[in-house]
Length: 188
Image: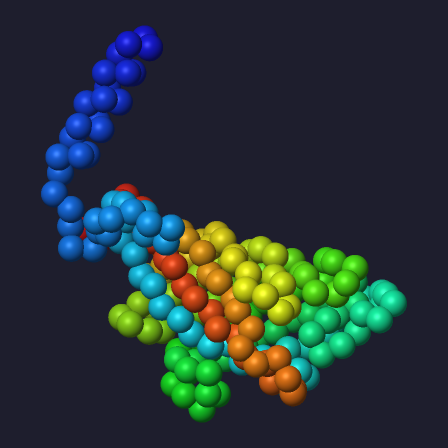
């Protein structure tokens, strides 16, 4: 049985290596570009306004010197429904909505566990992307993509959230999308 599987796997690799790439397949591997997968890379800006698009639902347990503009007490539950635009300027074109929740998970108030659904209508793609992961309030954070709908069905990849503006009632994050569709999900 084992030799049969070995020869079958070898034959499959030879067939895959000899097949020509399609227009949507990335030819060179890199950190953000797996070989053999259709990809889409772009950046948007998330605008979160306290008590307008984002609300503290449950106040956490304040620690010593924890509460500031960039921190929330341990255990704080925060919910949001934020507009996403093409530039850091809030009046630029609206192309999506990020909605979700986060729970402050560090005693220093700087990190949280975040869950979000990002609904998009851009670049000929319409649907939603679901992400889950840890967020740092003042540093870039990578979030794995765990699913999608519409044109983002079967999507994989990462979404990186980086703070741009943290002062004032509205905070702005740059959201970088690195999305991939496995070969079985490509439309024919």
